[in-house]
Image: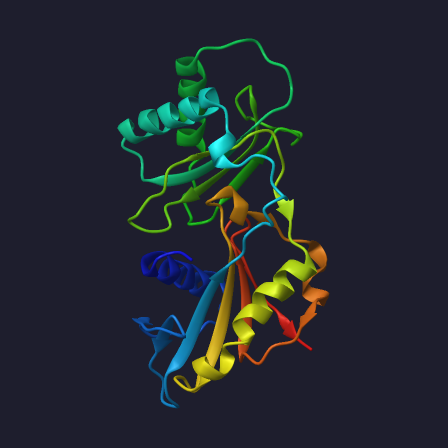
Length: 242
């Protein structure tokens, strides 16, 4: 699981995107991860991150071609030198043939694209080659650009040719069930306990597309509230209990 800084940043983002999220200062804890003081007692928050099954993604960061990695690494350097605010980027390459270009050329065009399209309202921007009015530089299939989640800005990710994995009911149910098995321990330390499930952009194995029918899904759990946060879609869903 991620460190406390990232977990807290997830909670703060969820609070920004979900109007019914409780106010108050997040205080570090263990089981649950954070608590917020309230008149009725400590309000607890447990954070968990979704991960794709090992066989679900062919394009692991460790398997990405060195050329693609060098393009994205160099593009990040160019972007950083521009003086623009820190952003996090996930870039998947296109499967369409393209003319051979040098690393510096690709990196320069991609850095300019990120500069021109960096988010200015805290939300994640997604671009796809298949979009009718796509402005992606040649060679790229899909790109997501997000404001830095915290001061600990993570490296830009260079993926292979691929698409984001769709989130399934079973995978989400398993994640909720794993945390629900520890609910009694959480409840002994807080008067109310919320679970935040996160689909992030980094690493690529935590990235999912959320299906439109998620609002019809119901889950078995004892939490007072279960929320799903998708960074790619800049959205929070309150998941319904059975």
